[in-house]
Length: 405
Image (cartoon, rainbow, N blue to C red; front, side):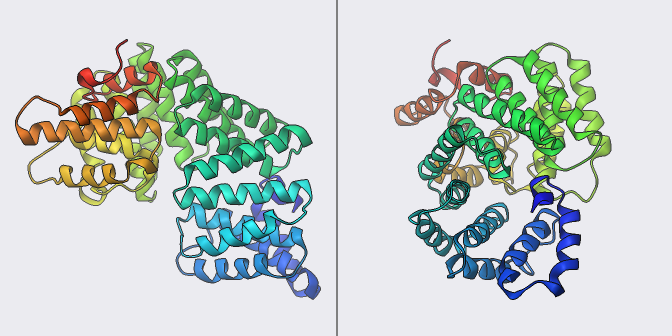
């Protein structure tokens, strides 16, 4: 467990496997939960075993064992279900979490229950409920000085939730706190994540020099490793920051460098994120032709469907801007619009604007119905003007419906 607190998942799994045969019966559930946590972080949980694993963890969480043991199993199950987008046991896990929440628990266990509920409710589409448990957990951290990995996760997730609501200043406060905690723990992956998210917020707030500074800090924490989506974030925020500062050559170098290092075996959702983000950076650099080619690659063939809700806005925006005969952009954007409440504030703006753009073309008239204009305006009001300005620079057809400068 100490190794896992330090994110040394492989070493912890080796130790657990060596100990399994000699573990007393009363510790088997605890050992199983910790083995599963390590296996998940090492990519060993997938479609072939996730049902059995979550079922076993749920059984432990609902059992009559020690409260701390039940909480650990619940937290592991919630994290796996959330990251793997597995919803089959969401109601049962949520019920088990509420049962534990109503028991008298140690502060660290209560914090873990709030963390689990935040993930389970977010997956169920209850953004407000998820935010409530993150904020409750954050208050506990402030008053109790808890500084474990759960505290770090809650701080980061609260920052992400506030970012999703368009509160980038509030999110920055959380990401800065998470970065300080990661510095104390000396965990490079958390340092990179907290730094990258600060870069994102600074960019949305128009502080492009700070965006570049924190993106570079995240790159240093990665120490030359390719770890997946984190590399996409870093290269994107470097590229956007440099482009908005007028340093277009450096911006293009940032994306070209990652393109050369991108493995051919990356999951489709990472590949699509990179294609769309690379197109954005190139567009900001004035390379419209290259940007268009990258965007088309990110929205056609095996990437014709959205691979992750994390970038639903850019996906809808580029679908509208690259609309071609035979591509069902209208239907895809309409499907995204039908569940617009599931997405972050800045994505809602892009989805609503993309829908209006496509409807204009369909009606063959350069007009916007009042209801559509008011709806788009309401979404625009939820994000800073600096973020809207960047969306305009990225070609989003906001027209006269957004708030005036």
